[in-house]
Length: 216
Image 1: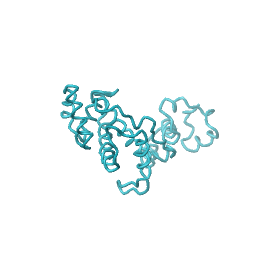
Image 2 (image 1 turned 90 degrees about the vertical axis):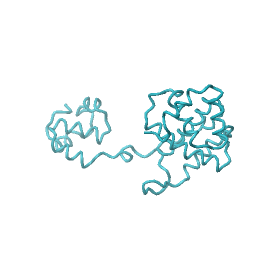
Image 3 (image 1 turned 135 degrees about the vertical axis):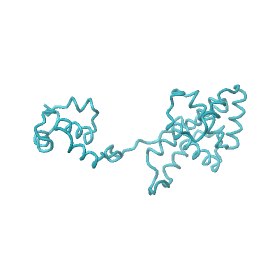
Image 4 (image 1 turned 60 degrees about the vertical axis):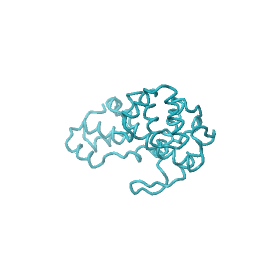
């Protein structure tokens, strides 16, 4: 489910080049967030690399980003049609300094949220280029920094659920589950693991799941 109606967005794709350009220029000049979201959605559906295969989740995420970026640009006097080459970096800095206001979370925005907003704003400018309204690319050299939080902290294993599963599993499957959940291995990688691959694994495996033979 998207924030802007897909049918209305696709109708923009059926307009002539001149008519689409007029709509996009007017929306960008007046900071019309709703129309800009439609232009963005039309571009993602019929002009982006993924096209109609773009996931609904991505479409929604990019529209959320546009609804944040457009008001920021308007308040800061940033022209969506002729942005400065440093405006992408300015928006990134704004996101990094802005406190989180969602789901009771305190502190700065999560790196994943920042990356999502930057990606959405970048897609909006690509949409304006696709519509013939502008050829500016303020995010051409702007990238959100990678999240340095260890993966196990960002996506901790499902401890309670895992313990329930381990209690119902035969030893070999239990060993595979532990390798995937705590070792971060893919299923195929876990299946290929042998005792010789793991430092100090002989006593640990025997103590945890018994003599299962999964790693031999």
